[in-house]
Length: 304
Image (cartoon, rainbow, N blue to C red; front, side, top):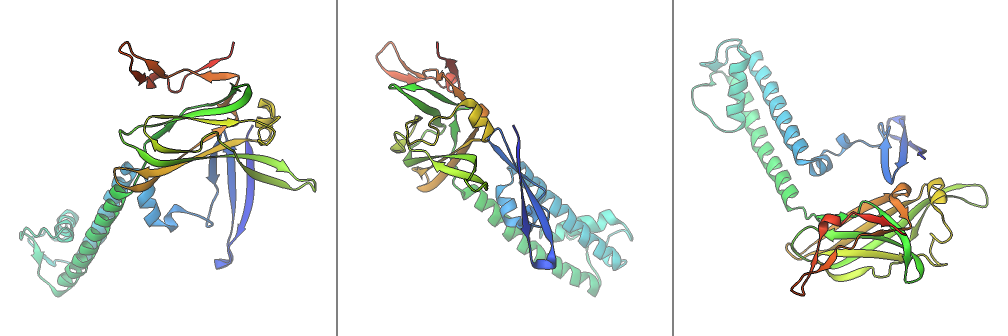
């Protein structure tokens, strides 16, 4: 079942209006139709920090080509102003711009008019500022702390110690500790008040253990569905009808860089399996030691 919510956001600037479309599908939230209300291009710094490395490199290359093209056109407007450059040759002035912007200066081509020297001066300033900005962005991306945490593809609701229990698994993919790791789980669902008003309400789910001193291998997250649980009395059908989504948030201190790291995940109603259990990944070796088999980390089995 697909849920679509439209929010009208009015902006006083320029008297513009835009409509925000939020789509909840299988636990994923899609934001479309943003118009002037929100755009990545209105926050280029955030875009360059969050875009994947492939996109970051492509944007930098595109910007580099565009800026050199603009300066090449500026040199062409000055006529025959570059020594040893063929008059009217775009390629010659383009590569001269590349040499100037990068402070290479082979000496084969150089400005011979006052106009060209002015453009070279401007381009040199732009080049110095551009290198500083790109270096800062690259450093910010490399230094940003990140967590390599995986979550089980599904969550299960299964009897545990005689009570229905919501469970899912998470694991640390790095060979280090996440110190003072804390887990938060929230339930989001549609509700209608007694007055008939629609609400998207968020509930905190109480966990059997929501904190661990050191998250190194695997963590089974458990929420007992008792009378105080917002999941009490719900069925697979009611989860779907109310567009239930489980939002998971994990935070802790990465011992390697001594900085706080975060990880998050979500489960839609179709990713919560009833009367299934996870395949055991903790085993005993012949020498008496224990080991974890991550090959079955996501596997579940139906209850007999």
